[in-house]
Amino acid sequence: MDALNTILASIRLATAVMSRSHYTGPWRVRFELPGTGCHLVAGHGRKRVMAGAPVAVFHAMMEGRCFFHRDGDEEPVELSAGDVLVLPRADPHLLYDDPRAREVTIGSLVSEGAPGPAGIADVRHGGPGAVTRTVCGTFRLEHEAAEALLSLLPGVLHVRAGQSPSSRAVTDSAAVLERELAREAPGLEAVVTRLSDILFIQVLRHQLAQGPDGLRGWLAAIQDAQLAQALALIHADPARPWTAESLARRVGMSRSGFFKRFSEQVGEPPAHYAARQRMKAAADLLREQSLSVRQVAELVGYQSEDAFCRAFERRFQMRPRGYRRSPELTGS
Image (cartoon, rainbow, N blue to C red; front, side, top):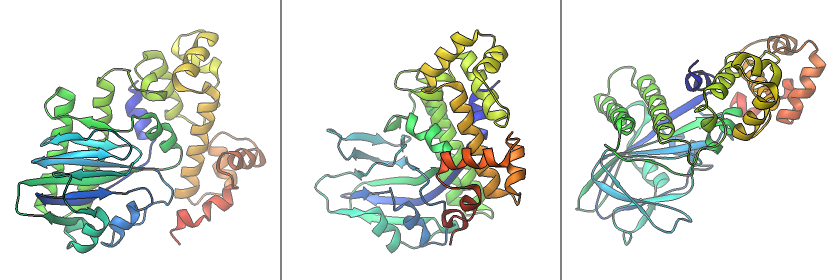
């Protein structure tokens, strides 16, 4: 089974391209995205995304060069055309071509710039110097997906152009995204959203291709064929009452050996991981379907509605009916 495919299919991505930026030297721009990602796109009619959903930010370098400096890091990193940078936890950071240039925020540039097609800001800033063009956007993952992915990644993913086949795939994905932005054809928003999703997956593929160093959780575990199969089974059928014994049997391992290896690699026992995925499936059903709580409980494998409600409350600190009425879900 393709574990990465199965896991990503169960994860909810909400991507948005925030801006196409045309910088001319000298320039220096600050990105403070935690808590402001919605603000950056709300002014141009974008849909509201779920409040509290962890956000990652990406920068795709289309032309020129600049420097990236994350708050707290000692040295800046040089970026060149074709590079793609992802900050899984959207740490505050700077992009600049001259550290002495006057600092402005991306929020102010987006607010001042004219909205382009599909509500994507067309940012122009700087002096009379060399040109740097970038595409900037966000990836949002809701609830369990954030815990299962963004927290497992390094703080900065820097894909350098031309390093390997996997890095070239990332660069090519970014180039296709920019070409679509330039076309302004019908259906642009839907196409750009899907291309952004593809860019995120290509970055993950590239990270996995570098080997297990620096990877944790299921990102490390899916490089183990037997653990990858077990993870794919859980994500493909989260309602099944998976146990260490049943999973070990399906992947051809002893229960004790499987339990030890899974717990060490993923960071929690198999039953705990499976239970979290079951609650994620329940939350998705409550959010998207007009089903009763009893129906949701049955669909995720609970015989008792009361038992389901107690388990759900332990996970989300609210009962299923309260969760469904939450302003973060309704947008009110």
